[in-house]
Each structure stands twice: as C-alpha cells, then as structure tokens.
Length: 284
Ligand SMILES: Nc1ncnc2c1ncn2[C@@H]1O[C@H](COP(=O)(O)OP(=O)(O)OP(=O)(O)O)[C@@H](O)[C@H]1O
Image (cartoon, rainbow, N blue to C red; front, top):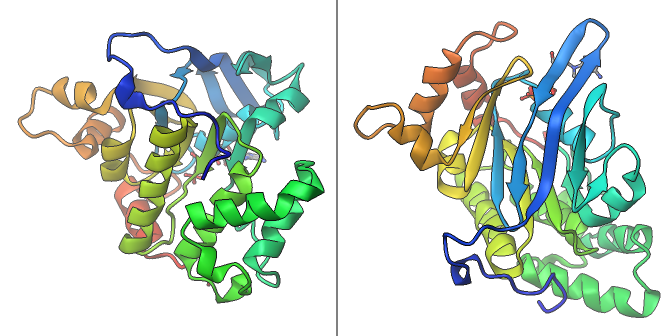
C-alpha cells in the first residue's frame, strides 16, 4: 500500500533520539453533573508510538478518547493533537485523526467497498482516486476477497479490520482505537494487533488505544497509563512498570493489581470484566 503516511520505521530511529510529541494533554478533566469521569489527566504521546490507556470499567478511558476526538467538550484542561487544540481547532483535529469506537460502525447491509465509499466521500477524497484507494486499503487489511460481500456476512475480525480501514482512509496521523479487540476470538484478535503494529511500524501512524487485555498491552504498547475512577494511577513503559514491582517475572496484570487493588467497580471486578469481554459476541 503506497498511500499511507510516509515510511517512518521506528527501527531506524536510535532509541535515544527524542521523537516529537504529537499528542499532549494538560489537566484534562470532564464532569457529568456530579460525576467526575476524568480528573486532571496530563499525558504526552510521541509520534509513531503505540500508547495504551488501561483501567477498569468506568475508569474514564472512553471519555478521554471522546474528548481527544472532539466528540465531547472538556470541562477543564487542554489538549493538542499534531499542534491543534481540541477546543479551538476541532475541525483541524478531526482531519488528522482516525477513530474506531467501541460500538459497531460498519453497515451490515452494505458491502465492504460500499462502506468505504461512504467514508471516502465524507473525507472528500477526489472521486477519480476513490476506487484505487479503497482497493489498496482493502488489500492492506487482507480483505480484498471480501470487497463486494455484504458486511453482515463478515466475521467479527473482518468487520474490525474494515472499521480500521474506514478510519485510516484519509491517512490520519493519529489513530484512536477504543477496545479494538473486544468480542473477537483469539485468532482475530492477533490479526488485529498485527495490523495495528504494521500501521505503526510501516507508516509511522501513532496509535492511541484502550484495552482490557493487559498481555496485549504489554506486548504492543510502548507506554501505558493506568487509570482508575477518572484519575491517572501510574504510567510508563510496561517493562519499567513491571520492574518497579520488585517481583520476579512480574506481569502487567501484577502491575495493574498492585496499583488499582483490582477493586470492584459497579459490582464487577476487572478480571470478571476481562473474561466476559473475551467471550462476548460483538455482533450478536
Ligand atoms: N454521557 C455520560 N453521562 C453521564 N455519565 C457518564 C457519561 N459517560 C460516561 N459517564 C460516566 O463517566 C465515568 C467514566 O466512563 P467511561 O465510559 O469513560 O469509562 P471507561 O473506562 O471507558 O469504561 P469501560 O471500560 O466500561 O468502557 C463512568 O462513571 C460513567 O458512568
């Protein structure tokens, strides 16, 4: 695929070279009435990084993503993406981001091609380029054979890939993925993660994701933030967070439990939620 953002192979950049900050928040806060969903979050994400937002149900992860994607106004604080302010330059922010929400965003009554055509029009891709771009992106996603099949006949993993295709058609610099592997079987989950990694390593796309699957966050993410009840609990590279526990062979699960206490949230604990979501059928 030739159109995605110019190659910025992370392996070519010496580890010590500081990379530009592409996303930065300062004191980002959101209230819903008396509920403080997100409280004073300050994070910075480097260009080309895979950054993970982790936390139990209700921690505030989706609310952070919704503010950063300009779907929800912040109650306080600020954030910039690729230099654009989410409050004062929301249209510019929307042009440089892609967003795959938790909820299903593909239309089952249309083919994969037709779904992408809608997004191509929304992104104002010139009509003479649309067919080529769509075919390129479907091939990149491994969906070329399913181009003209109705999406209702796709597997959950194929739909997720199509949704990612929709969100990167306009070559965003930053891709937001809210729980991208919920409800997928292990094979489909692995395929989605490989795709995410490929986007990042081959094309320099910055990935900002939320997940309940800590093992995957551990394998994929350059850095993570753990949130609980709207607050930032800890952040860092998974290997540094694990090393900080002073426990042999510590996992990111251990880190999570250490910092959050695996406390009950809305009557369901983290482990139950992760288990439930693992078996959930996204498409019913
Ligand atoms: N539109 C809303 N109105 C009122 N309260 C809301 C709204 N959206 C979120 N909240 C509350 O804000 C808090 C954070 O919710 P949020 O969905 O951001 O958490 P989350 O970490 O994404 O959870 P999950 O993992 O279940 O998706 C919760 O207490 C939630 O009930």
